[in-house]
Image (cartoon, rainbow, N blue to C red; front, side, top):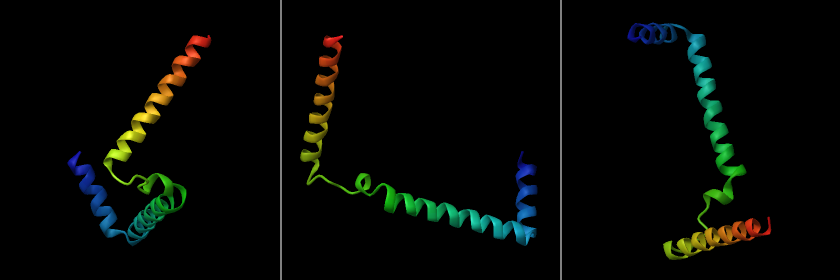
Length: 77
């Protein structure tokens, strides 16, 4: 297995085309990650709580609301 990786490493090291293609792949990953982080998920990444107490209260409230809603739905069926 070690010889296989050394073989691949040496072939990439010798080939200028492989270096260019790897560079393009890494740039695409970096741009795609930046796009996802910046434009698609900004609300999930921004902190919306003032402190840890406020955050924990909101989490508990959401968990209890979901639990109560589930219990209510189960009783109706």
